[in-house]
Amino acid sequence: MDTKNGKDHHVTNLGSMLDGLIPLPPVGVDIPCSMYGANTPLKINILGRLTLDFKGGFTAAVRTSSTDGVVVEVQGFRVEADTSPSTPGSGTLIALSKSDAPTVPLSVLQAVSSGGLEMLLHLPLTVEVIDKATGETHARLVTAPAKHATLRAVDVQAFPPVNQLYTLLEPVQLYPADDSAAAGTELAGVLEGADFIVNQSV
Image (cartoon, rainbow, N blue to C red):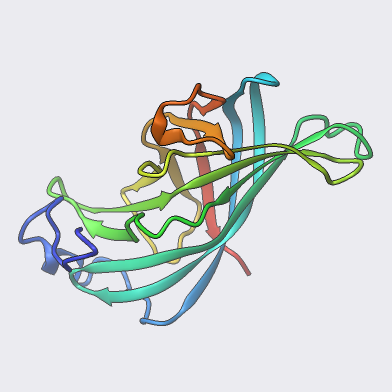
């Protein structure tokens, strides 16, 4: 769906397919969601290649809701992983959060030509490396200005989500936050993949 023009050019003439498939949330509702991503591969140059379990969540703020689809704004996205959970007073936390990027498209729930529904969550990312003992951020990485991560859920049976799997569509390149990623600075890391289980928070 083209959320700028209100048209769907991922699929065509499929607006009525949402009608009756699942109950649609009302406009204006904020849906708090929890998410968990086990064994997430993340490469950060200063730390090497890590495999992490991320926990956190976000709020899905419904902007439009009709048989043409549901458009949501992802607010407050943040997940954290502890690189050394056996030592709670020392070690490193890795946090993924949503960056401020006004050009990123809104997220959508929409029908697909093969049948069923998909949900796309678009997220410009900030990655922080945080000392657990002091709370100090040792490194901050971001996606390039014109890039973002996209998490995709297929065969959506309910929204708000119930045990819904969201998968990273493609690896996400990360750059130092204080450098110009658009100018082709050296990569500082890569989010190589991600599988998150998402539920409505209670």
